Amino acid sequence: MGKNHHHKRMTESTIQQTITALKNSNLLKQRFLNFEDLFDYVNNCIRGIVGIGQLAVYDISVRIGKYLCSPSIEPRDYVYLQQGALDGANKLLGANPKMKECRYPITIFPAELQKLGSFHIENFLCVMKNML
Image (cartoon, rainbow, N blue to C red; front, top):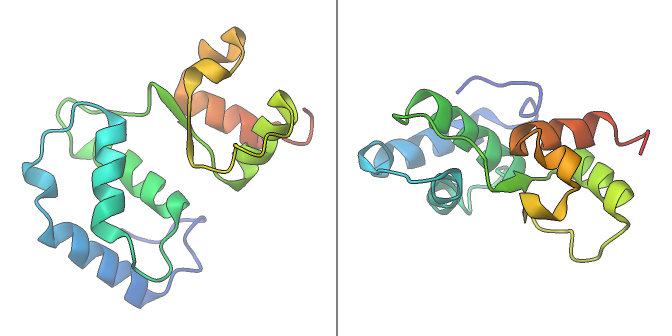
């Protein structure tokens, strides 16, 4: 789990604790029906590790879903919003005090965006946040 641009501030200790927690779980023996189940499982495995936030949980879950699950799974019914994408969503949908969580049903977004799918809605909101 090498450092990418999102996680360059994570300490080596945090990375090692995360790897150990995931290895010690039964993650690879689980059968996940959807991304939300996988995300929740990963979140429960590494919750409490100092330096791990929701963005890390999401990124780890995306990679596990893509590379270790068969068939691969990805976000579909929910859009996962971190700071940049959350800023874009608040601009698009109007500032909403309830929009502080990490995931939102895809159905709250305009139909045109729903056609893109969850993963691309997140990217769109993050990239376009200053233009919305």
